[in-house]
Length: 474
Length: 131
Image (cartoon, rainbow over all chains, first blue to last red; front, side, top):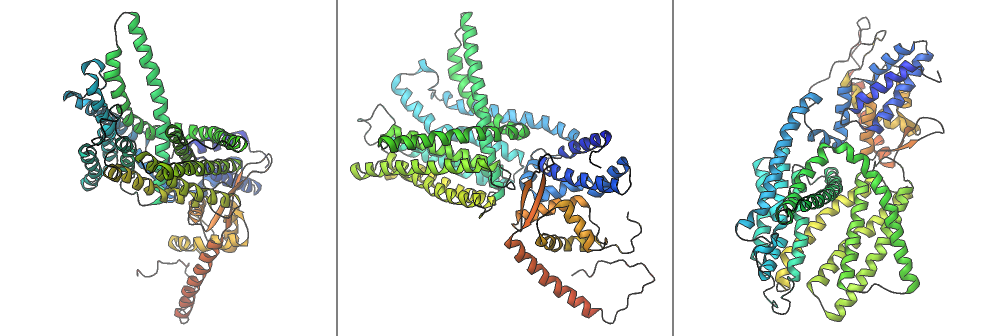
């Protein structure tokens, strides 16, 4: 029974694709079941059954697909989520609800875009260049700087809450951080201190708060995404994966959107119609905000697409980032030029470190925890360790700057962020190397990352709520 | 429907004994799904009937609990196959399970000393008690 005959092969293929239609059973599960099926068929064949007979008996012994997929779903909570996302057991049932969902999604997206432009009705419209004088532009831009996430993200939370049919009590709970943030960030008298000295730029604490606020609110959206089940580790990893996929989709769509608007402006220019005011004051801001919700919907509705793309992207960029960091470290070691503690350089480094942590986190969230250590895990260790080195160097630079010139909001925020990242990277590197040596399970790595998530929220909350009064709103 | 078997074990019992059985088999050495089922067949004299597919979600659960470790092995020119190996935590769970089963079995033995199985009627295990 070395080779099965062609009709059996065709039947096995059909059975495979039938199983794969179940959202709870994935390729590796089917591979495993197929291996079983083939063993059984050859054994029955050896016992004298014909090909078709052995196939039928083997299929029957494996069990009904419905029960099987339910068992898998029970075991794989992460895939259970996926199954819940597109409710309904059969494809036909799903089609109807998908339409409804599409229109509801569209409603939330349009509402978000309109809400984002609502301040324009009260004369706050930094997107329309000619309507206000330059002094106003600054205060209007600063209004958006502070409020962008408070204006845009409630609709994402609303959409997710609708989708998960969250009870009113949970929704009320989710609204609290938004109200708190909206009040806090608009009541704080930012820049009141030395406004004359730095009239040209907004205050540092204001900008720091504006950068950190979306992190908190995004994690609030995460609670909605997980239907409030954020305390458990496995679902949290689902939200990490969602975040990564959302980011990839958003980038792609933003890129497409920019190309489209550029072409639109160009085409209308050719027929002497100036589209630019409309594009800058309506199309770009509304598009950017509406896309937040459209993308969140896309990530889940078209999950299988991104699931195939994500591992490819991470395995392309993990080695490239590792290479870049190693080269930078070598460069520092050879030339002896330590990082210059200028603000722009430190910001660049922090962005780099956050990006690397995101990359590692995302590729872990998409990794099959069952597979044994592979080359890519070693590359990741190189990446994590070199990020660690860069982090320590940046930390040293900030500390020397602080001892020399004292604490400023920016330096303190940088210091805190680097410490938060350092703690994560040190333990990640340790766990990863233990995993490569076979001493730790991959799930330990996942658990470390998921338990660490609240640390980011706490740190961001400190920067938003404590820093401004601490530094006198400078 | 199985024919030619005179003993059919109730579903509840099959399910309850599944974890200790699989762990004990993996304690004999690393193995894969089909071989584990063969071994169960051997050990029970063919009397423990499983729906084959159900073994796999169970193995994944043991994996999630950290009782077993899974790895894919792909032989040259062959199909890849997932092997499972028991972990120290799995051994601990196995000895705990064994202790519990021994208590249950001992209690049943004692309770049944005076009870004679009527051999002419086909034996079927009824769900016992409702706790």
